[in-house]
Length: 88
Image 1 (cartoon, rainbow, N blue to C red):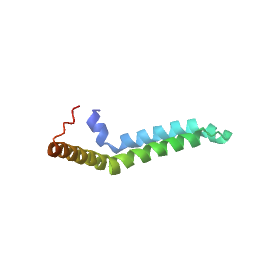
Image 2: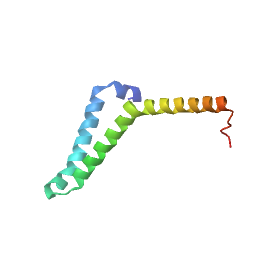
Image 3: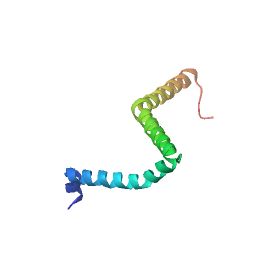
Image 4: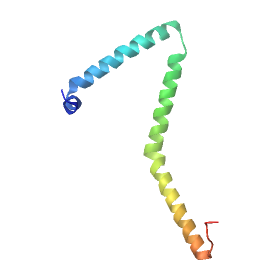
């Protein structure tokens, strides 16, 4: 089966999810039963990575880049108007 055929086949995703669920159950079940703190740390790290990634991609990424471009343009205009070379 080709790679593209796998991507459009829903059973591929069902198999991947089932495999992930089995491996996570096998890994985390003993940790939960023993009262380990490791699953909590994993959830906290995953939440942080997802939160900061979404925050940067959807909120700050474009805004920060636009602000930097605006600031760069403003400094170039300032230097040009005041006869200052910013290449010291």
